[in-house]
Amino acid sequence: MLQLPGAYDSRAREGKRLTPDSVQHINIKIFVKDPSAIRLSDAIGVFHEWIRQSVCPEMLIDVADYEHVHDGPGILLIAHEANYSLDNREGRLGLLYNRKTALDGTFQGRLAQAHKAALAACDRLEQEAPFKGKLAFDRKSIEFSVNDRLLAPNTDETWQALRPELEKHFAGAKLERSGEPRDLFRVLIGNQD
Image (cartoon, rainbow, N blue to C red; front, side, top):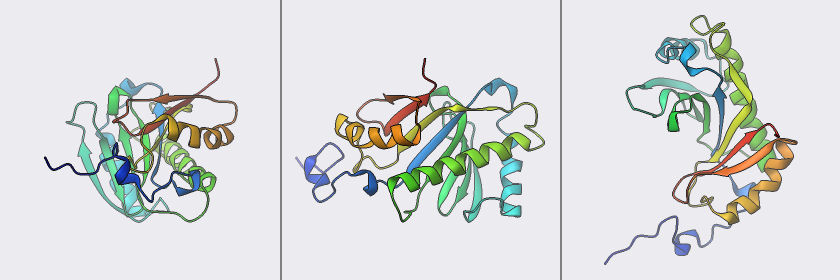
């Protein structure tokens, strides 16, 4: 039987050692306080206007509507370097910043860039006409993930490697690893109880 190397096959990871500074493709999702307060489809026009006005530092390209997919990716603003979306995966609506291209520097620098980009998009969305007074993000309810299952599988090894860096960036916040081994490496970040 032919077996291709995969994320759980140590042969596939040969030559790729996980260190915090080797991690690219950082995702930050900031959750919405009350998803019922908005119509997701309103983001389509808003995102098209963002493209026309070049409001983000990335090269904005297109908008994709996945609202019809239950607990899916929602409405995407596609850029060359990253995607922004009002993402509804696992039934939790939030602004997702998904970095696609590599950035120079350290893990801390890349994490700060992704977090700052997500916060800026949240600030801007809350002020857009269809959402003003309705859409509110909980900036203390965040999901961090790495969109690279080969380099950073959802394992204890990845958790041990990245936990100190996440504790440094999100100082004082509660960190909880989330998901199953087949999922992206994810950490929920919130207030200490």
